[in-house]
Amino acid sequence: MNSYWADWSAYLPLALAAPLVLWRPLWNLTRHVVTLAHEAGHAIAAVATGRRLTGIRLHSDTSGLTLSRGKPRGPGMVVTAAAGYLAPSLLGLAGAALIAAGRLPILLWGAVALIALMIPFIRNVFGFLVLVAAGGAVGVVAWYGSDPLQLHFAYTAIWLLLAGNLRTIVEAARTRSGNSDLDQLRRLTHLPRFLWTATLIAIAVGTGILAWRAQYLA
Image (cartoon, rainbow, N blue to C red; front, top):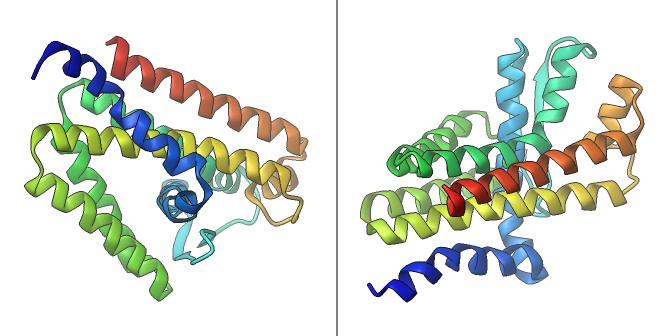
């Protein structure tokens, strides 16, 4: 591989991720990946805070729902509600950090394991199909893919999560349904909706910057 391609190929994942997030026909498909990570965040936070996870649903319109039982208010519920919009960014940053540390196989097989752990809690057929498709794709790349393919695949997925999560936060901020995570956080904490929006956007941008540094400046 010549030095020119070795330098510029590092930006291929960004070039691939951009249309996956910015072009709506593709975004209508790839957003399911971001929703999967979003609902995984709710589920992990629910279990971590002592709540009982009862079900996860992933819908064909790219929305999702994670149900858990526990106190209807309090820190545990706030963490669970906030984790949805935090998870894709934090997972993306964790992925970039693992690659920078030379742990790409751990990243890929860890993603497969996380998806597999969600399967028993899925409560609809479409959600099950999304998990099987996502887990199968990562598993095939992890098992059969060459090192360059695995690397580009992983970084493309990372930037899809990072940029896609930012887009979902902005879209949620523009929607006044009263049922979004932002609305739930406002009700739980009595803090303004715009403050939660600004905080989540700042975290999404910050994790993107850190992931950029891990990939390109390490």
